[in-house]
Image (cartoon, rainbow, N blue to C red; front, side, top):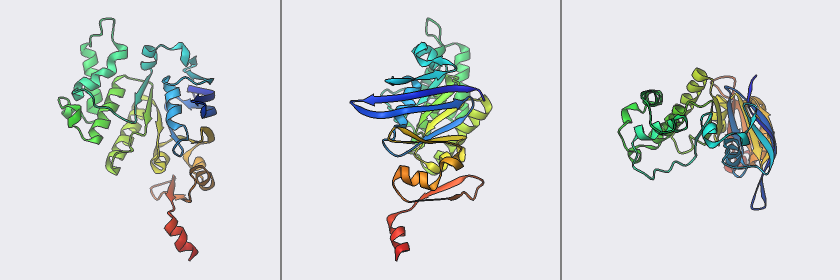
Length: 268
């Protein structure tokens, strides 16, 4: 497979604390790659290193064979789009104004959008089912609607890679599935590489081609969901009892954290 990202021996230290230590991995073009792990594992920090927002003290990140340091912010934004964990609504932009911002890395010297740019933005809004909200202000949207608008902006960049930091955390199950199905459909249609941080092990199991399990900034395991979602690995990484069986929907692992009260009942 064609590697679109190569991460070699990345170490990140912040305020004398090691956030990432000797992280190495490759991500293939068109892959749905999900990063999992407990709080403080370094998931978001790794995503920021991959996006160029953080500079690692050691190691290298290669995008399409080029060291990330060779890219300007503009050239990097032409390849990579970011959907952040927290979406700040500071200005009364409309949905349409927000989505067209995704064209910024592709604009000419004058910074004026062309008819084609607006067409791409409209297609992105239609794909994410927010076209009917085009004239609505961002602060008037629900959480699920706002998340789809930010994804539409990322799609409008026409990137080869989309980075998502816990995009489903604040959403109900129906909206979680809508976001995940949206990303999977876009990946299949455009061969876009999706790299996502997630706390939801079952969503990760159902959608990911491969998983990266991190703990305390170190790689515990990389592989397909059935390999990584291993009972002993998960219990050691998360520090709680887990039950891992097969999801009744198909050949994927299902993970159930086991509360203490159920453990006590078993002992009785």
